Every structure is written in C-alpha cells, then in structure tokens.
Length: 99
Length: 135
Image (cartoon, each protein chain N blue to C red):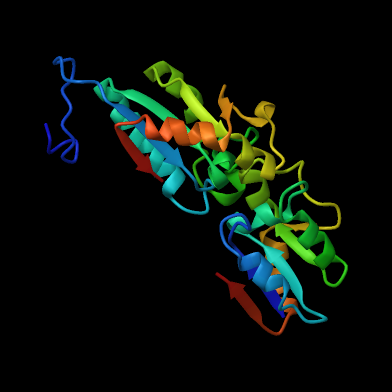
C-alpha cells in the first residue's frame, strides 16, 4: 500500500498516525505541507528517522523546493518528481491518502 | 468608507485615530490559501496608514524562509512580496523564537529582517494591539 500524507507534522498529527499504521511492504510519500515531515532538526525528525528503519519514505521534490526546504531533507528519504509519484501509485495495489 | 473596509472605520489622513493592527500568521505557505490571503489583506490595509505589525508563529515561520522555488508546483511564489512591505512602511515583523527553533530555522534563513521574540514577548505584542487579524 502507498500511504500519502499532505499535512505538516507541526500542525496536525496526521504523519504520526500514518507512521503507526504502515505494514511491511508499504511505503509513505510526503506531499504538499506533508514535506515538512521530511526535514532534519525538527520536532518530528526522530519519529521519522525511526520509521525509516522499517519502511521507505519518499517526498515529492517540487513541494520541497516550493517551500525552500531543498537543503534540509533527512538522509534516507527518497525524493521523487510527479512521474515518480505516478510510478509509486502504479506499483502498489492501493493508495491511502491521510488527510 | 465602511463598506470598502468591511465595517472597520478608517479615515485616510482625515485625522482619525491611528490603530495598531497585528496580522498573526500561523500557517505554512502553499498548502492552504491562508498565507497568501493574509499578505493580500496586509497590502490592501497598507493604503490606510495604520500602525501595522506582522507576527509569524507556529508553521507561519515557514512563510518567510529564503529559497522558495514554486515553478514545479505551478503556484505563484509570493515570498518576494514580503520584501516589498518595507516600501509600504510595514517594518515590524516579529518571529517567535520557540516556533523558529522547533523547525531548526535561524534568523539568517529569513528573506526579510525580522525581530525574534519569545512567546511571552509575543503575548505582550498581541496584548498591545487594537486589532488582531488571525490567519
């Protein structure tokens, strides 16, 4: 399953809840304000780094760049563009959008 | 006059009392429309010669981060507009220290000069206003 998260972790608990509900073989993609969850040195960094040990986390690069966060992404988070987003959606049997 | 200002009584240079307006920004840019709408209202209100301050707390601090490039998401990059505020005599921009630090941001990461204040100081700034507009 592909999980997408589009809310900032410092505004909603969406990312926290999502990360608790990811099974083996599933992946997480951070989009829109969700990309703030991909950053180093924030209050959610530890939680995300811990999650990275168990499943891959991707972030949509155009959303990172729009917010000026291009030099702040946690090592190990994979950056994708829109066609990468489409590929992830096609690779997985279902998509769960955390809102 | 009150029709154009949404019921807020303002007199342009007419000797009316100058009020202190604070625009409180708590939302990240682009994910919602709040940040852009706030800036639009600030620019409109700038025409009325009031005492205007902007505050950035919580995710609002992300609005004024340098290096925003929005071509990839096909949305207008409004961050350069913050630099134009000085031209409208809007020079009081406050950033809350706690919000900034929770996001690993430094004063040098912002695209305009700001005054960094702690939460208690921000509370005093809010208290001293005639009007607080929250976005």
